[in-house]
Length: 216
Image (cartoon, rainbow, N blue to C red; front, side):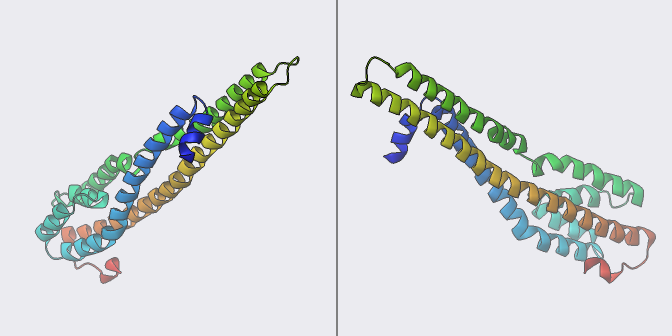
């Protein structure tokens, strides 16, 4: 009930602000599920693949196909499928696959930025509209209760809309910052794992045994 009252008190700008908050919440939930899945399974899957790949490329390929919902698994899959390529071509395949996965890792970042930028501006617009409404209600020749109610309503609209815009922006900014941190750590992990796979491929291609430290 209180939320409905605040929505009404905030004026017309509350409509797009509520829309932005719903969209941002839905996108945040999707990203949380995505990163939870990556964090929970990625390290175990990739270490298994690296261990298997030393001895059996086909088994490693099967393992990757079973976990193709992970970005790093799709990157490895592109490379392992051309295991017969020379090392420089193998590396190029991984680099190309990594570039193809970047949009997935950065998904919705631009939408988060848009919400963070627009929500405070909508709140500011509500502030201006509320103050205009308050001043328009002032009648210097009359100090009746009706005028007081209109002025108070305008001030309430200004304050509520400003607060709502800031809340939506701060809420979105908090999670967007977390997702950017996840993205940076994921890029570092991809580089590390790809380097390890390159070493193993070089060992297989040149015919010498891979160093066990690669997997440690």
